[in-house]
Length: 581
Image 1 (cartoon, rainbow, N blue to C red):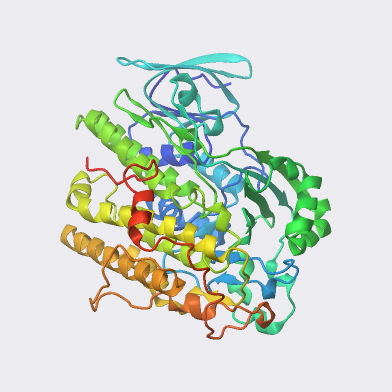
Image 2: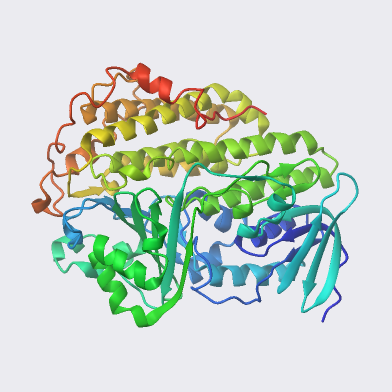
């Protein structure tokens, strides 16, 4: 066995996606930095049946592809992703073509990918070693001693051989083991309670095969097949994912809020199959057909986790699920790895180059948590409406717009660590945050007035210019002045969309924002949603203009926006504005 290292500049606890990508990013920034990564698993790890979190969205895809320079591997050895796709319930869910569908027929300007985690992490591990990072697999971490002054001490063991590393920085990327969170008493319970079970099959399972009508398949041939998307089968309190992997396998999972579906109903393969037969019969049929190809099965209770602190002036940090994780819906896991790693690399660079990191550690911790809690509003108390085809298409696309207007926008323009950016745009960020909180409460109220109604049709996002325009603008290179102007435009566009959604809902609610008359704002941006949602389930997949489905029940909403404002105002725990550092 090689001699075990005894000193390092940075020791990383955990060599999974978060830890290995962090090590590579830090090595790019500080080529002379001595980095040791300790990973408990033996490498190489199995392909496919390794970990979930295979689906990336725009920030994660940019982070891996462009920031880390892994685009060649991703395009050659992983799969492109045809966005997120959603099928809402209709009848007994036995005919996918009669379910309301939300998705696109073209790839977005900013790409995203489906990552076989085993294949990807094997590549990252090899790349770390090739770049001079000490990557020790089969390393069992025994203890971590964090010191205010001097080097921290990490005790570990490899094949019963003990080792100690004295390190200037310690970064915890150990996932659910969460060494630093446990050691330092940083654990914090999450108000979002949901559970998940997942499994992989050594076979490509394609939703395209679930309907043989050529009209339903039109526009989804070859590389635009629906199976290239992260497919979501939606229902009251739950969703089921299907994700294709480049190794030829398919990842599948059941995610449900606890108050609707108990984990004990689907925490084994046989139970999961019975659950699918009840709620998603077409999916169940595919599972039965390929059950001999089953590669693994796992389940987790209350997967949401929080942390009191993730970055410290005392030279430690936390990334990935070792700190925060809210929900797999919208595939945000890799995004928050990118955020945390970017902040940590900047802190370590500042410390090692004598630029000062202590105040920044406090600031970045606050900003990261505000990103997290701002995103959490999209999930908390929202699973109740997941089976509502009248509300969810507008809510999902609203959430896209918020993502592309705040966190995605800031990351793509490389302003994550620019404190002046937060100061200059503080007012607009607070306005967007307040509007988003208002709209999330509005969606809950809208759901209450339309729950139980059904719809079908195809909300084809390719036919919505606002989607490709806003996504494509992430790639623009902007000066500071142009960035401020774009923030203002983003806010105006969000206000216009909020007014449109409220107006089309038919609910008696006063909008909290004035109507925009700016020529730069696209009016009727979400019109296609309401035109494409058909009230009659018998009209199937046809994409033709119709009036919205059943009108809301009078009296379900407050007479004006004042009450909504109170319920999502500053006194509520979810109301978190972006800070100024």
